[in-house]
Amino acid sequence: MRTVEVIGVGMGNPRHLTQQAVDALRRVDAFFVLEKGSAADELAELRRDLCRAVIGTGDYRLVAVPDPPRDRSATAYAQAVEDWTAARGEVLLDTMEAHLEPGQTAGILAWGDPAFYDSTLRVLDGGRATGRLEVEVVPGISSIQMLAAAHRISLTRVGQPLQVTTGRRLAEEGFPPGCHDVVVMLDGACSFQHVDPGGVDIYWGADLGGPDQAVIAGGLGEVGDAILARRAEIRSRRGWVMDTYLLRRDVRHP
Image 1: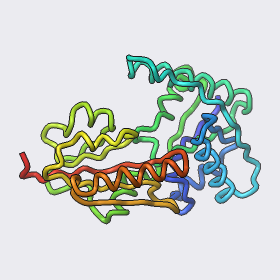
Image 2 (image 1 turned 45 degrees about the horizontal axis):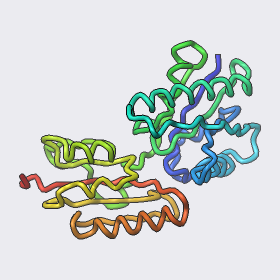
Image 3 (image 1 turned 90 degrees about the horizontal axis):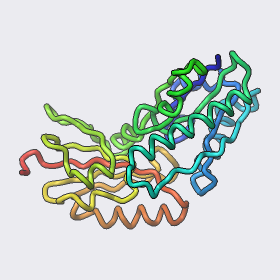
């Protein structure tokens, strides 16, 4: 059996790694990177830079794995994602078995923390279920934590719940019932545009913890357009953008 270390690496800044993550990086025989063949492959290069910065010129290897395409035209979104996840798992497992001997350790570097809207653990479920892999998880600093630090705020208020959701759910359902603090991730459509701005503040951040960090905060009605413009500028310049935000509603607002 082969072991896989799933290591949360934040935004790839070596200073954000825990000592546990550093130790895990140094145990790995080969790192496996799913590459999409697009501008997003800059993220794969950032993973390589991180390995060089932390491990140096050790005996580890970096193995590129072609990422299977996802059917974005499917009407059944959840099923399409499930099928894509299974296909990624098979490709990844086959590649690991081709490049590692039993008893060796694979490494997968997960952005932020693998517990928050990261597919890595689901991708590896098939290997765990069939006994082909042993999976270990090392937590990392999430974009949620970095968002709060960048804005110098607490995500929770006294006696109030916090919900983490996706842009798709926010656009379809709005604020969750009984919740006035919502962290939104995976929102390529800027779904805050569909929220009634009355009594709502937004705390937005992109490239959190990175050299090009951008943050904007204020009343949703006042700063929404500025966020749209800044996000579009980043995406135009780099081809991709990783952002998240907190929507905070006045608890007295109906």
